[in-house]
Length: 86
Image 1 (cartoon, rainbow, N blue to C red):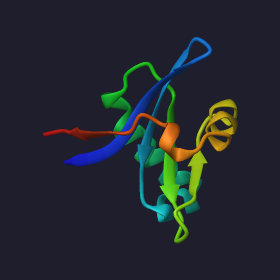
Image 2: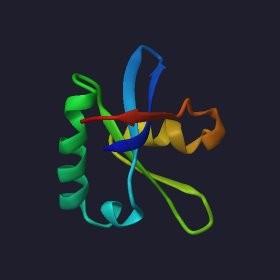
Image 3: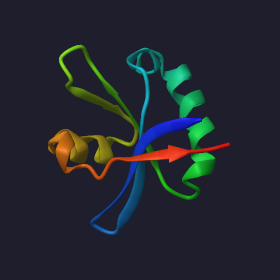
């Protein structure tokens, strides 16, 4: 499986972002299930889910302080990477 994500260190907090389909964010139950499925790839780090709308704008779901931080960044400022898992 391949997925897009990033690891960010900001103000002493290391956290991860994973790009998911927008439909994942429509249900907190589904978002939590998906977050739990990605957590093993980022052990010990808070995980934020990110999805793009039809206009390319990002929406974030996760810890409020991290979501607020990301909302003030342009997506080009995030160090996106492609991750491959088996």
